[in-house]
Image (tube, rainbow, N blue to C red; front, side, top):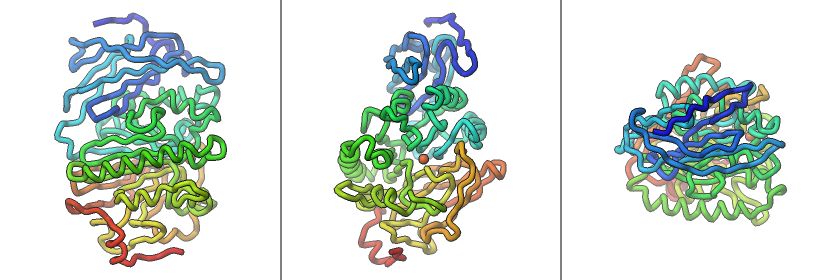
Length: 426
Ligand SMILES: [Fe+2]
């Protein structure tokens, strides 16, 4: 085993040696990317194994990038074909970390999902760290707006954020998608260079998919829409074409992977005061499309997407099943839902406090709360998924929960929606 005697020495938030260590799923739950940053040119290799006494060396790649006058070296090593249900140790220079792989028969697991978590006012941070380390969820999905911002103070705030979360994100996979705050005006440079998401869609973490047990997960960029004027429309078309093919393939695989869960930063549905993203042009173009730009919602409807997570609005809101503004508020609405079920979970802890709901919820709103917190989703089996909203304001208490269930083979269709009639909102 190669032993490095260089000890990580931190001066303020910047360390000499590897820092900001985190892991993510790569092409499967048993392929893990390990990423870290150094400020000095360094070797991009680590040692790893199921025991600290028998570790093997593995080399990776380094990407050197410059932002705000600071040079950072992003290192990544891909650990492939790991054994299921095993504790793994990995060592980068003198720093040793560990994680546990998911079981081979992956029918049940837990996910922590949230958006909008910053360094300042990061109300959920300690709870996420504690519960993640305690094994209360198997991985994290952060649906955009990280650190507020990754690029602030020449990226030092991003460094601080990643170092703060390191105890948990070096131990359980941290999956991310970009929000509007990841736009650093140099085409999401900080977001692209700090993370390594599955290489199944774009090559820059903006959109991708991965199958994890009974769920086909898809992360998308809504920022292609939000920054259309700044960066042009080509990425919207590229993502849309990819999504069409991806969901088509996922539908052919429903026998093995029955659920499709999407995550994106900006919501289709929400009800907050001054929520232009809930109702006005920003929402219309994202959902419905406009001026030759394709919207996303019809793809979700057409392909019978089951679950959709979003953030951006700093609140929690669970919707009734809803498709193209028609909602299905009825007893048993979450069993064999006839439309996608959306959950807004953007209340983890934004740098600016306060977000007001509209005085009257939109009619598709089933439950809403402005408590700080995050969502824990439990995939129970092939037919049942449970959602709980954890409130930091109420000491980690559960303030909303719901089961979404469907029979084997259930896919929602236009025919079903016609049969239900639903409640139109026009
Ligand atoms: Fe946002």
